[in-house]
Length: 114
Picture 1 (cartoon, rainbow, N blue to C red):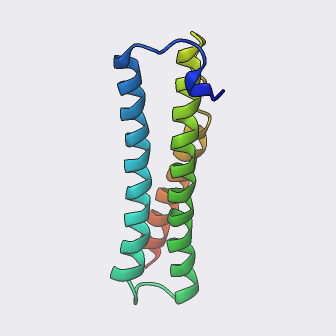
Picture 2 (cartoon, rainbow, N blue to C red):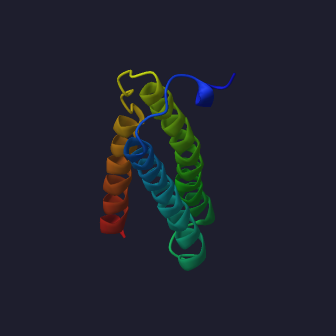
């Protein structure tokens, strides 16, 4: 029997809130993907090819990771709600916010250096 059939069905409001949170993570992943495409297509002469490739790869991989994490988080929350357990803490928030802070700082340093 799958976890979707175990426990009791949660209140539909909580299920819908969980789905909205899932969609918010997917929107964030799409924003990272759009950033990667924008860097690649709109700034061909801004930096050397190797550096631009790194700038495109990092947000692209982040988008893929966030997409995967969005489903895992949705499923974990759904499981917890079905069993009346506490919702798990989203550990990826620390890594995402730290990585974004480092990315912003590096971008500012590079722009000031140019």
